[in-house]
Length: 365
Image (cartoon, rainbow, N blue to C red; front, side, top):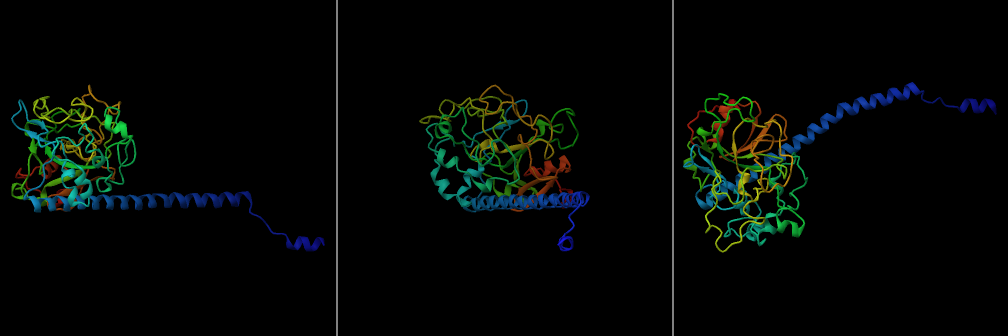
């Protein structure tokens, strides 16, 4: 019996052999994980490109039906002194809201009352539509707080507080102007936007009123319509309030809200420019893409009054994405391009302006 038991005995792994196998598996996982993450990001980036193409198709369908591109929501008042400034004079609606019916959002479009001046009108008549999550307006790579497709109940907004949910996010917006210096000379080397020169501000393709294709004299293939500004959320505070007509603080005239209740939360509430229905989701381009200047956002979220905002870092009113090396943009001809972080700021200015007369070669970005 002893001989039979000895014959059937099997040798086991030694501790060293087991550790070697574990080490090999760990190395294989370490090699595989970056490849998996890279593949996932490639898929997310492709989805982002597709989103912009869908938005581009909607804008061009709008142009076919109306003879012009829609307003940018935010625009520029060139009569202000000493320099031109931001204004909100095309009603309280964004470009994205205006093209919903061309992007399979007809039901949502029909639920919105564009006759009132605010998407967040105080009676809540537009809340159901404007709180809808639109996946086509969301980059899957974006990171934000709170996560998800909407911003959560705004403590300063009685409508969203009543229903316990927020308005829909967007990661895209019109590049409505640029004030990058055309000389490319740094004017304020220690600031977040050293190449900004407010005296050289020029319109982007989507501006005040409607823009005809003939106005884009730089060429639609050389002019940005919509760019990524991904990850904006309640931590980012606009320098503008709901009641400001002009960036110098000029309020809307007393007759502006005649027969209406105005925006929920009051005209003193800071604009929530991360929402797809908000006209302030348009932005000026004042520096290079993916500006990492700190702080990226204010310390207090959901602020109503009293903050300066507008620090132009992170996703705060600039071209910004969570894709490595650059951002996706929609051009006026409906194509989507990837703008590298390393692009010359002068070239970037030329891509934003609709009629700056710049000559831009295809290999410059």
